Image (cartoon, rainbow over all chains, first blue to last red; front, side):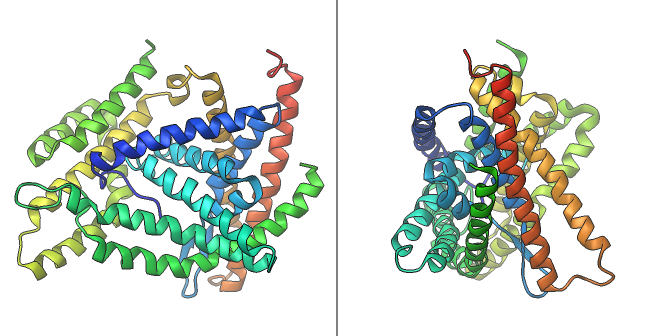
Length: 215
Length: 184
């Protein structure tokens, strides 16, 4: 779902980097407060897990598939700030070592997927958990797909309005909100159900494994 | 200043510059310069860049052609500008990746470069394992696997990756502590 390079104007990605830099610093500071011999390897392992979860295909009827994000699974099990750092690191690895995603879109992707996706998932899970644990996890997964999709659709959709030439021709992403919102949101509202199932089953598995590994 | 760090700064400056230029001719000239800088790797990097951007850019371009036709405007200048910029940025990134050691470029922060190295090495291992899981499923099926089989395979792979991630975190912590990494 995350954005590729070259479709965002500097008016968008430069302020996004400013905001993300502050939040990365804050997240690292929160993590450093509890930094010990376990914490850094733990973050590296969660990052690698997030990386591979984004490679895993959620099969669809008809033979096609979509990729999971694992955002809600990380947020619910490891906390929002850890998920934010791990997803940001994954996006940086993908952009700077594998050439996927893109450096201009990195901050927007990290804020949308890593921070707001994680925070929305965690909040949805906390709100519904007292009523129904399974429903809370499925909802968290769905929200973690839909909220970043909505933000990315918004960011893409405002490009023609904020970056155009004198004749009104778009300089970056060429479609407005009337196109981006339905085009991005409708498929992701359906795909979110798969992410919800991954969050539920993944959390069950992680609980069992944590007992085995005593972490 | 070290070579890799200098190249990282140059790369980031070039990325910003490419998004500040809105002349297709200037972007095309920059693309030619990049291909010359790539030397023997030019064809390989260009092919790789085109492969990465093909699906998304084709979808955007075809959609914009349709939109422009409905509005009665010419789409070609906008499409040339957007596609040239995306290709330039992608090629620039692949050239950067092929020429620069990112871990050396980021060694001003030992924690960051160490974290990246550890995450990258594990991610590479996971990537290889993921490819092997996919091949294993294909090799065990005479026909195209059913939906339920693909779900089971994905679930088993996810469980294995989570198990490995937890085990690796523990092993890395023990190894680093044994070598006195956190003593300073």
